Length: 461
Image (cartoon, rainbow, N blue to C red; front, top):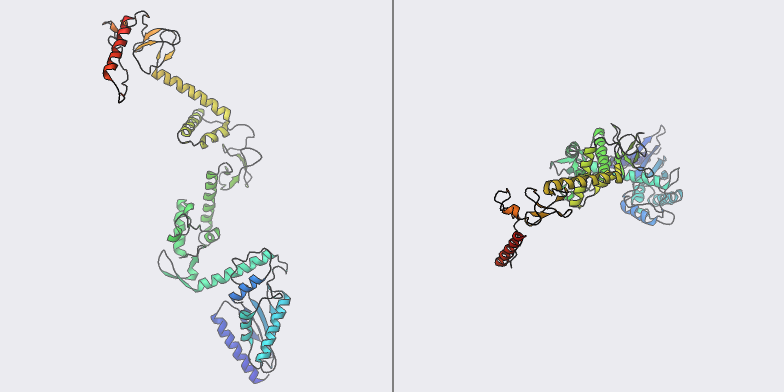
């Protein structure tokens, strides 16, 4: 091997090693065989502008490229002949997951053109620059998705995973200031949420630990001040939570979420009634009240007991049920909320519950009548005096009686009872008569005259 060529080759390898040692995002390896021939490979990333041009120029169907910031590298596998770089070009083989073979052949010809222009000089660096910055999209050079047993979607998943890994490597190489502890931290000890705010792992884990222990899953949002307003709140995703909390904490989060879903949408979801099972069950759309959990337990979503078929849910305490239903009806009358009433009617049957309601209404009516009326001494009809004197006439049997003591009165002289000094109702004809609020144009003289005329007429009866 020519000593000059060998020296140039060694110098080129040292230069590339120095470059790629500083920039760990690209991979460069080489080795020397027993004959002194150097071979190796270089992974070269295409520049971001070139990536964007390739994506815009390529027809890849309905694949979403919105979040793709970089493409996987193009690999250059090289072997340096003994007379490189004086007279022989490097032997190269290109490989790439997203360029078809025809496109790689065009890039290969571009490398040969560089060698022809720079013969006698080390050209691996020029090859790298060409691939990074000078590949121009054309009808032949376009992105290919699929192939090698992969679908376009699977291929895109790999491209996105590579981009995420590259982004994470860059993030870890930087330092960041945590807005909670206000200390500068290495990226390896920080996490960037989807809203782009960065926190150190220790602070964010402490923040989440408090929320999980309190069961406050609705507050599992970015703690940055810019994300605290309702219209800007950004929830911490499950993939981010997996990096921050333990497996037990993640199980508790899922259980709390399931409970909340069952509470807020009880018509469609219910928590499994089996002890120890934290799964949420979607109600059967074919059979009313039937829930079948993934754990195998089948139950009624109303009473949460083992499935009892078309039979109504068992009633443990009738009195308690009646009180609940009546309170639900009262609440509906006050604020218009009918959720609890409908739930009880659905669980125990509308006709059954409304029969109880009628019973309650009748009982309350009787209770009110008993507390606020006087029975007719003859027919026992309850009579409630709204206004007027204490001389009452039963509307059912036309009996005259005293509203105060219930005594029968002589229909021809009913006032004798109130005029008799020996009667306990003496001079109490108008006792307990509620005062009427006088209107602004009230004439007291006329009112007194009308009352006097009424008393005279009643005295003469």
